[in-house]
Image 1 (cartoon, protein in one colour):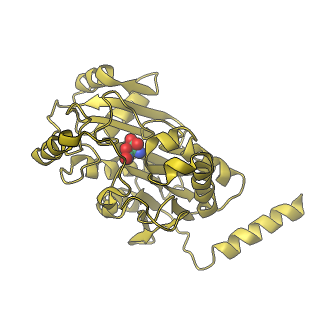
Image 2: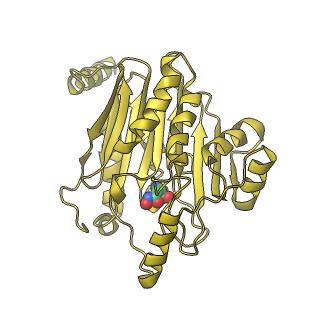
Length: 316
Ligand code: SD4
């Protein structure tokens, strides 16, 4: 047994040659989220808690009207409602989540309140909204003119088709390890544009859109949530790392699982994962080319182009 452990350790070290493994670090889905990782890094570099860092990071695209897949400015469902999903986890394995919430700019902060101030993990719809209002969050109209125009155009054909790599940004999944090696994660989204009213994706589901375990590391996903929901992708990534896999190998396993189970759907759907482990190593992988992610580590905020399982995007 000792022999096989040694073999794994050597393999991982070879795979990882040249990489920096310093703390703190933060990883997020999609290149444009450099601003989110910068906000998280500010907290981390000042010795702050990973939980505060991921919340600060997630709040950046939530407040940005130009990001059409998260928070304010998010594209609506087919009835014109901007409905939001978010979840958060801390270093103790505590979790909070909101789904199908409307008119609240920062669902990630409501998810945190659910975690810290209620005996529950998840609140949904009107209940989540009422809870947010009772906690002092403001009611806001989140449908921007741009999003409304896009929806009006969509209604002409009303064709529901997931688009791969929507303008190269989408849901933000963000995971951080702070100077004290505490791990936290967050995920927030407006979900699939023009979804059926009431649809909830992977992003607010603990273990699907995001999962962290302080003994191991954390992972988050982006893309077509239905594929991640059916495979509990982020939990799978963390469990693979627990069994000794490097984060890169772990995210590859989760993507391969999805492709093996749903090969037809994967021809036209994108899913990407990011992961970091307790050793400060990272990984990112997707079904199709075009996914990228940001890692802020060792003072450098760097965008990585992800490798992918399939080599050619079929519907673009
Ligand atoms: C979701 N993973 O709700 C999220 C984001 C998304 O198309 O919809 N992307 O499925």
